[in-house]
Length: 399
Image 1: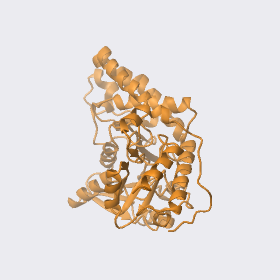
Image 2 (image 1 turned 90 degrees about the vertical axis):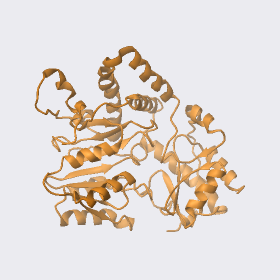
Image 3 (image 1 turned 135 degrees about the vertical axis):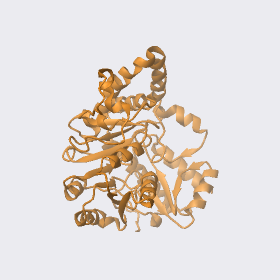
Image 4 (image 1 turned 90 degrees about the horizontal axis):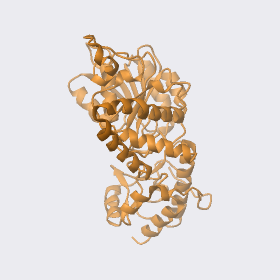
């Protein structure tokens, strides 16, 4: 796919660098363009981290009443607002999204291999788990090729209609390419079937692209977390759980029955809300940080639409400069998803046989990107302003 520049470098008036001062100062001259992999945390998260420590010291065991009460109430309300969910109680937290994948698999019919449909472009953790379970014939996994991207949704629906799958798992934005599945409603409509769990991996979509789950909230699970565009770091993941689906996952921890601990019941009880998918004891500090980020976004009047517009403007500024003078694989003609294609996330992917070598060379020059095979990824987020892109271009031109 090729793209010819059609406009001058795009500019964006949004400049929130002061809100990321601690991470930026610690960068010590390095230019980080990995917001899609590890976004800088805004300064408000440091106070939140300390608040988590102080609550633990002040409350000890009683801290869980605060964590699962006031903290989670604030976090789930903020997530629901950004995703247009009708009820925050359908949300549940976990330290990572892999826990959710395992619990969803455990909710599928027993006694035979679980039938799973996905793309071949899902994240490493999911792909590795599928391959290992398939070795022991615990899953039957069908992976639809992600490319050609233009027909991916149609081919997924076609595959889903040909077989009785237990679980369908699809990324909102594919992590290797940045391609975005824009028609989530139509995709869910086409893949919904009796007894089937429909799961959207939204890690590269949450707070990166506008996402409205209101019409599919009753049929689709949605998984995301704080490590990337939610800017809250590790340990702050969540899942939206449509009511009535998978009421009794076999992979379950004591927090899934937290409200029944004092009753002495021996039966395995599950709540009807999202907490039926909870696990066991976890480090709650990530939820404190995520709460601080969501509050800060509300104060700044920022949502995923504004964030995506900002990232796109920075992308356009970057690619316009590269059109004038490419640097190694960083050239418009190497873009896997061109700027003329709106179905993309907040990072750019340059496909080149020497992508890995260039990623190392850029790192040595103080430019931090990342690579997946022959694809060099450059990400943009709220931590960046137009001046950062200009600094990146200036440093690239010294190579």
